[in-house]
Length: 287
Image (cartoon, rainbow, N blue to C red; front, side, top):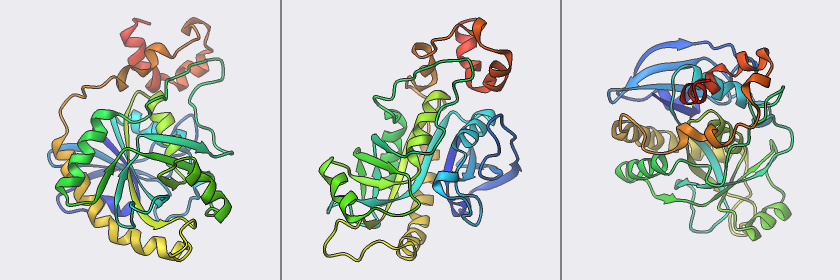
Protein backbone atom coordinates (compact mmCIF):
# COMPACT_ATOMS: atom_id res chain seq x y z
CA UNK A 1 0.00 0.00 0.00
CA UNK A 2 1.19 3.50 -0.78
CA UNK A 3 0.44 6.38 1.58
CA UNK A 4 -0.05 9.84 0.09
CA UNK A 5 0.21 12.94 2.28
CA UNK A 6 -1.02 16.21 0.83
CA UNK A 7 -4.08 18.36 0.30
CA UNK A 8 -7.60 16.97 0.44
CA UNK A 9 -8.02 17.69 -3.29
CA UNK A 10 -5.57 14.93 -4.15
CA UNK A 11 -8.04 12.12 -3.53
CA UNK A 12 -10.79 13.63 -5.65
CA UNK A 13 -9.41 12.09 -8.80
CA UNK A 14 -10.81 10.14 -11.69
CA UNK A 15 -10.34 6.40 -11.31
CA UNK A 16 -10.04 6.35 -7.52
CA UNK A 17 -12.42 4.00 -5.73
CA UNK A 18 -12.88 5.20 -2.16
CA UNK A 19 -13.70 2.35 0.21
CA UNK A 20 -13.91 4.01 3.59
CA UNK A 21 -12.31 6.42 6.02
CA UNK A 22 -10.30 5.28 9.02
CA UNK A 23 -9.89 7.19 12.26
CA UNK A 24 -6.68 6.15 14.01
CA UNK A 25 -5.80 6.78 17.65
CA UNK A 26 -2.05 6.82 18.30
CA UNK A 27 0.19 7.05 21.39
CA UNK A 28 1.33 10.40 20.00
CA UNK A 29 -2.12 11.96 19.71
CA UNK A 30 -4.50 12.44 16.82
CA UNK A 31 -3.45 12.56 13.15
CA UNK A 32 -4.37 15.56 11.02
CA UNK A 33 -7.61 13.96 9.80
CA UNK A 34 -9.26 10.68 8.92
CA UNK A 35 -7.35 8.46 6.48
CA UNK A 36 -9.10 7.93 3.13
CA UNK A 37 -8.72 4.31 2.02
CA UNK A 38 -9.19 3.31 -1.59
CA UNK A 39 -7.97 1.68 -4.76
CA UNK A 40 -6.20 3.36 -7.67
CA UNK A 41 -4.89 1.59 -10.76
CA UNK A 42 -5.55 -1.73 -9.05
CA UNK A 43 -3.41 -0.86 -6.00
CA UNK A 44 -4.37 -0.06 -2.42
CA UNK A 45 -3.82 3.57 -1.46
CA UNK A 46 -4.37 5.67 1.63
CA UNK A 47 -4.61 9.47 1.60
CA UNK A 48 -4.13 11.87 4.49
CA UNK A 49 -4.77 15.63 4.29
CA UNK A 50 -1.72 17.03 6.05
CA UNK A 51 -3.36 20.26 7.21
CA UNK A 52 -6.78 18.74 7.84
CA UNK A 53 -9.76 19.22 5.58
CA UNK A 54 -10.31 22.93 5.14
CA UNK A 55 -6.60 23.58 5.84
CA UNK A 56 -6.99 24.36 9.54
CA UNK A 57 -3.59 23.19 10.87
CA UNK A 58 -0.40 25.26 10.64
CA UNK A 59 2.84 23.47 9.66
CA UNK A 60 4.15 23.77 13.23
CA UNK A 61 0.89 22.36 14.61
CA UNK A 62 0.89 19.22 12.43
CA UNK A 63 1.21 16.04 14.47
CA UNK A 64 3.81 14.45 12.20
CA UNK A 65 4.38 11.50 14.50
CA UNK A 66 0.71 10.60 14.61
CA UNK A 67 0.38 11.02 10.83
CA UNK A 68 3.22 8.62 9.99
CA UNK A 69 2.31 6.21 12.79
CA UNK A 70 -1.22 5.94 11.39
CA UNK A 71 0.07 5.17 7.90
CA UNK A 72 2.24 2.40 9.35
CA UNK A 73 -0.69 0.95 11.31
CA UNK A 74 -2.84 0.90 8.18
CA UNK A 75 -0.21 -1.09 6.26
CA UNK A 76 1.49 1.51 4.09
CA UNK A 77 5.04 0.61 3.07
CA UNK A 78 5.68 3.62 0.82
CA UNK A 79 4.92 7.31 1.35
CA UNK A 80 4.75 10.16 -1.16
CA UNK A 81 4.65 13.64 0.34
CA UNK A 82 2.97 16.20 -1.95
CA UNK A 83 3.50 19.82 -1.00
CA UNK A 84 3.89 23.39 -2.17
CA UNK A 85 7.37 24.93 -2.22
CA UNK A 86 9.04 28.19 -3.11
CA UNK A 87 11.82 28.19 -5.70
CA UNK A 88 15.31 29.35 -4.84
CA UNK A 89 16.61 29.01 -8.41
CA UNK A 90 15.69 30.85 -11.59
CA UNK A 91 15.23 27.66 -13.62
CA UNK A 92 12.78 26.13 -11.13
CA UNK A 93 9.69 27.98 -12.25
CA UNK A 94 6.19 28.14 -10.77
CA UNK A 95 4.28 25.15 -12.09
CA UNK A 96 7.38 22.92 -12.18
CA UNK A 97 7.82 19.82 -10.05
CA UNK A 98 10.93 19.12 -7.96
CA UNK A 99 11.86 15.76 -6.43
CA UNK A 100 14.40 16.72 -3.74
CA UNK A 101 16.81 14.12 -2.42
CA UNK A 102 18.26 16.19 0.44
CA UNK A 103 16.84 18.30 3.26
CA UNK A 104 18.05 21.01 5.62
CA UNK A 105 16.13 21.27 8.88
CA UNK A 106 15.58 24.89 9.90
CA UNK A 107 12.64 24.22 12.23
CA UNK A 108 12.62 24.79 15.99
CA UNK A 109 9.43 23.57 17.67
CA UNK A 110 8.59 20.09 16.35
CA UNK A 111 8.80 16.60 17.85
CA UNK A 112 10.36 14.50 15.11
CA UNK A 113 11.24 11.07 16.48
CA UNK A 114 9.27 8.06 17.68
CA UNK A 115 12.05 7.15 20.08
CA UNK A 116 12.88 8.24 23.60
CA UNK A 117 11.01 7.26 26.80
CA UNK A 118 13.58 4.58 27.55
CA UNK A 119 14.58 3.58 24.02
CA UNK A 120 17.38 5.00 21.86
CA UNK A 121 17.68 4.55 18.10
CA UNK A 122 19.65 6.56 15.54
CA UNK A 123 18.63 5.97 11.93
CA UNK A 124 20.81 7.12 9.03
CA UNK A 125 19.52 10.14 7.13
CA UNK A 126 22.50 10.59 4.83
CA UNK A 127 20.15 9.72 1.98
CA UNK A 128 16.69 10.57 3.33
CA UNK A 129 14.76 9.77 0.15
CA UNK A 130 14.16 6.27 -1.22
CA UNK A 131 16.04 6.17 -4.57
CA UNK A 132 13.71 3.57 -6.06
CA UNK A 133 10.51 5.41 -5.16
CA UNK A 134 11.99 8.73 -6.27
CA UNK A 135 12.99 7.24 -9.62
CA UNK A 136 9.51 5.83 -10.21
CA UNK A 137 7.98 9.18 -9.24
CA UNK A 138 10.23 10.98 -11.71
CA UNK A 139 9.13 8.65 -14.50
CA UNK A 140 5.51 9.26 -13.51
CA UNK A 141 6.09 13.03 -13.70
CA UNK A 142 7.44 12.72 -17.22
CA UNK A 143 4.55 10.46 -18.23
CA UNK A 144 2.13 13.10 -16.94
CA UNK A 145 3.86 15.84 -18.95
CA UNK A 146 5.28 17.66 -15.93
CA UNK A 147 8.38 19.85 -16.03
CA UNK A 148 10.17 17.70 -13.47
CA UNK A 149 13.56 18.20 -11.83
CA UNK A 150 15.10 15.23 -10.03
CA UNK A 151 17.26 15.78 -6.92
CA UNK A 152 18.09 19.00 -5.11
CA UNK A 153 17.95 20.34 -1.57
CA UNK A 154 14.74 21.27 0.28
CA UNK A 155 15.09 23.69 3.19
CA UNK A 156 12.36 23.12 5.77
CA UNK A 157 11.60 26.35 7.62
CA UNK A 158 9.39 26.78 10.68
CA UNK A 159 6.84 29.23 9.33
CA UNK A 160 4.04 30.08 9.28
CA UNK A 161 5.51 33.36 8.03
CA UNK A 162 7.42 33.34 4.76
CA UNK A 163 11.12 34.25 4.63
CA UNK A 164 12.58 37.68 5.03
CA UNK A 165 14.62 38.75 2.03
CA UNK A 166 17.79 38.44 4.11
CA UNK A 167 16.91 34.84 4.99
CA UNK A 168 16.05 34.03 1.40
CA UNK A 169 19.40 35.32 0.16
CA UNK A 170 21.19 33.36 2.90
CA UNK A 171 19.46 30.12 1.92
CA UNK A 172 20.42 30.66 -1.72
CA UNK A 173 24.05 31.04 -0.65
CA UNK A 174 23.74 27.60 0.99
CA UNK A 175 22.83 26.03 -2.35
CA UNK A 176 19.19 25.41 -1.45
CA UNK A 177 16.87 24.60 -4.38
CA UNK A 178 13.39 24.85 -2.83
CA UNK A 179 11.90 25.94 0.47
CA UNK A 180 8.88 24.60 2.31
CA UNK A 181 7.47 24.01 5.79
CA UNK A 182 6.59 20.31 6.12
CA UNK A 183 8.76 17.63 4.50
CA UNK A 184 11.69 17.31 6.91
CA UNK A 185 9.76 15.75 9.79
CA UNK A 186 7.94 13.43 7.39
CA UNK A 187 11.24 12.21 5.94
CA UNK A 188 12.75 11.64 9.41
CA UNK A 189 9.75 9.72 10.72
CA UNK A 190 9.26 7.68 7.57
CA UNK A 191 12.84 6.43 7.90
CA UNK A 192 12.30 5.50 11.55
CA UNK A 193 9.10 3.68 10.58
CA UNK A 194 11.00 1.80 7.82
CA UNK A 195 8.82 3.34 5.11
CA UNK A 196 10.05 4.28 1.62
CA UNK A 197 9.71 8.05 1.27
CA UNK A 198 9.88 10.62 -1.49
CA UNK A 199 8.70 14.21 -1.98
CA UNK A 200 6.65 15.60 -4.84
CA UNK A 201 7.32 19.31 -4.43
CA UNK A 202 5.14 21.65 -6.49
CA UNK A 203 6.73 25.03 -7.15
CA UNK A 204 4.20 27.80 -6.55
CA UNK A 205 6.41 30.90 -6.49
CA UNK A 206 9.90 32.34 -6.37
CA UNK A 207 10.87 33.07 -2.80
CA UNK A 208 11.40 36.76 -2.05
CA UNK A 209 15.03 36.74 -3.24
CA UNK A 210 13.84 37.32 -6.82
CA UNK A 211 14.09 41.00 -7.81
CA UNK A 212 11.77 40.79 -10.81
CA UNK A 213 8.93 38.81 -9.25
CA UNK A 214 6.26 39.96 -6.81
CA UNK A 215 6.96 38.88 -3.25
CA UNK A 216 5.16 35.74 -2.23
CA UNK A 217 1.66 35.97 -0.76
CA UNK A 218 -0.71 33.28 0.47
CA UNK A 219 -3.27 34.16 -2.19
CA UNK A 220 -0.74 33.84 -5.01
CA UNK A 221 0.43 30.46 -3.75
CA UNK A 222 -3.11 29.09 -3.50
CA UNK A 223 -3.84 30.20 -7.07
CA UNK A 224 -0.85 28.34 -8.52
CA UNK A 225 -1.36 25.37 -6.22
CA UNK A 226 -4.93 24.96 -7.41
CA UNK A 227 -3.63 24.79 -10.98
CA UNK A 228 -1.14 22.11 -9.91
CA UNK A 229 -3.68 19.80 -8.27
CA UNK A 230 -4.74 18.16 -11.52
CA UNK A 231 -1.11 17.64 -12.54
CA UNK A 232 -0.25 16.03 -9.21
CA UNK A 233 -3.26 13.73 -9.55
CA UNK A 234 -2.02 12.59 -12.95
CA UNK A 235 1.47 11.99 -11.55
CA UNK A 236 0.12 9.96 -8.64
CA UNK A 237 -2.07 7.88 -10.92
CA UNK A 238 0.90 7.05 -13.16
CA UNK A 239 3.10 6.35 -10.14
CA UNK A 240 0.69 3.99 -8.41
CA UNK A 241 0.18 2.06 -11.63
CA UNK A 242 3.94 1.57 -12.01
CA UNK A 243 4.76 0.37 -8.48
CA UNK A 244 6.27 -3.10 -8.22
CA UNK A 245 4.64 -5.45 -5.73
CA UNK A 246 7.76 -5.45 -3.56
CA UNK A 247 10.26 -2.65 -3.07
CA UNK A 248 13.86 -3.35 -4.04
CA UNK A 249 15.47 -0.91 -1.60
CA UNK A 250 16.77 -1.10 1.96
CA UNK A 251 14.24 1.28 3.56
CA UNK A 252 12.32 -1.57 5.21
CA UNK A 253 15.38 -2.55 7.28
CA UNK A 254 16.43 0.94 8.41
CA UNK A 255 16.28 0.02 12.11
CA UNK A 256 18.73 -2.88 11.83
CA UNK A 257 21.74 -0.59 12.29
CA UNK A 258 19.91 2.01 14.36
CA UNK A 259 18.52 0.45 17.54
CA UNK A 260 20.90 0.98 20.47
CA UNK A 261 18.88 -0.09 23.50
CA UNK A 262 18.32 -3.75 24.24
CA UNK A 263 14.59 -4.36 24.01
CA UNK A 264 14.83 -6.14 27.36
CA UNK A 265 15.71 -2.76 28.89
CA UNK A 266 12.89 -0.81 27.22
CA UNK A 267 9.86 -0.03 29.43
CA UNK A 268 6.78 -2.09 28.53
CA UNK A 269 4.76 1.08 27.91
CA UNK A 270 7.27 2.26 25.31
CA UNK A 271 7.42 -1.15 23.62
CA UNK A 272 3.65 -1.27 23.40
CA UNK A 273 3.47 2.23 21.97
CA UNK A 274 6.13 1.45 19.35
CA UNK A 275 4.82 -1.98 18.40
CA UNK A 276 3.82 -1.02 14.80
CA UNK A 277 7.20 0.69 14.30
CA UNK A 278 9.27 -2.15 15.77
CA UNK A 279 7.28 -5.14 14.50
CA UNK A 280 9.43 -5.74 11.41
CA UNK A 281 12.66 -5.25 13.35
CA UNK A 282 11.59 -7.67 16.06
CA UNK A 283 10.52 -10.28 13.53
CA UNK A 284 13.82 -10.08 11.63
CA UNK A 285 15.79 -10.49 14.87
CA UNK A 286 13.46 -12.95 16.64
CA UNK A 287 12.91 -10.53 19.53
